[in-house]
View 1 (cartoon, rainbow, N blue to C red):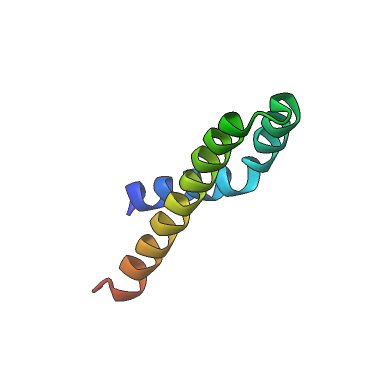
View 2: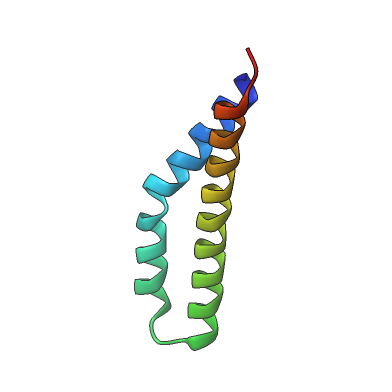
Length: 66
């Protein structure tokens, strides 16, 4: 249960905070298309991973036998 809580905490924290460096990378990158692809795939991929972690932990929590 403790690792599930830690995973969920890290995922939620990333979902709440990642917009800030994401925006700043876009500002500092300018119009470099390759850089934009790296930024977007990097950040959006990790956001999807965080969502998967939360969904899996939620599923484990509701199907857990006591």
